[in-house]
Length: 383
Image 1 (tube, one colour):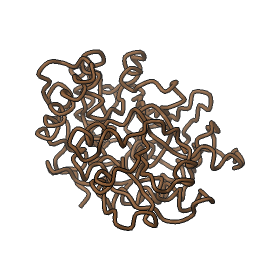
Image 2 (cartoon, one colour):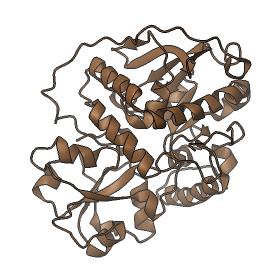
Image 3 (cartoon, one colour):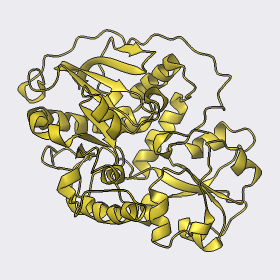
């Protein structure tokens, strides 16, 4: 299916025969309202707010694409989309550029890319990754649009009708097929939920291993594989079961929007206005995902780079993010919020995991070294 930096996996071979649609990247022209003071970003934010994502366009990133206004431009070569930054029909006075990750940046880490390219304003960095690179590429998360990671383990209910979750997989001793880059796996091993002897880290994204040997468990994303295996893998074409790693202690904030730590001070006036707009965009998207999902599908077709993602998958992902609480109000109150006690727990847990692997992290790493909640509007919720 798919393999990328950070272990993200999805189908590339499944739709190899899909035709490139060549459809227009333009939305219908519409009059945009002038910004009020609260959302006027001109003069306080960069003229173009550049966001580096951690993968190709997908529903987990849709709140960013939701902000792109009419007459947007697609750079097919560099896999970037840009246009006016718009919220609720209001032009904020600046542009936004959303850049694809994965192959578009040579599968480099977002953190590394942020330090190589200073034009990047915000990058998607999960809390555990921020810990891992804290000594070399320090970043500070400013908003967490995803409340839970969609990372999961999946299994065939026909082969294992008695499995209810990841703990059952661990007790069974069955082989667990994963990529090398998913930090939820070493955490599950350290906590005794899975055994190291079970782990096979040779997963290359293909469905072949799972299809031909459904006794194994396999890593995936709740927002994709359950739909793809049911509808787009003819050799399988039936339901799977799964459990989120978030349900067994993997309590990171996935793909939090982060800035270079050294830029936090200079960007603070911008972030004070921009972060609530990002929160509002997630609320707007999750309540009405259809139009943005159509835009995602059109952009992916324009990129034509082997990544396949249509509106049906995006619609499934949006429903799943809502039903599983992947997008939800944070325990701290607002959507996009970050519970700093939770961030501190991640900092402590993953510092010890990475240090045991020989990775240098900041000594006595604190939550405030990798995240801040001071720009989040606590009144913005999904309900």
